[in-house]
Image (cartoon, rainbow, N blue to C red; front, side, top):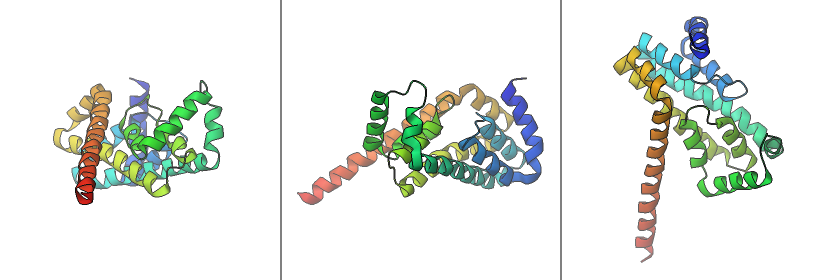
Length: 205
């Protein structure tokens, strides 16, 4: 049995009595200082299959837990994130400048997109960078809620509709699903900004 599947089975037994609050605690840990790739997603889907009526609660609390965990890392980033990033292996001054420019150009998208992508995407680095490079607190909250909300609610809906088959599908296509969601977000943002600029130009004409 793969290691993360073993962990998922064990955590299911431990967290089941606590329902959505157990998932929230797990999400806090996974999004802050403890990495449990895929475990949160699989357990959310497992709980949703066992109790379809609780799916919205499970997805909401998991999103909230992820937000709390990310907020802890964001706070670390605000206080000393740039110094921490400089000590990261293979992090050069040139890479650091590129990351900073990425945040200046793309803002909340620089947080939303990585939040949708699967491991081994280093999401924690993006969260630390958001704090270090001055993404505002309201924008950061909005980005995490949108990104994680889309991810967890999508998984919950799939679990309720397709049952255990959804878990296997997500396991086998985790990367493509995350990439597809990220592309959809980017495309939506491009369309939004395109029409927003057209409206501004029309009002100025």
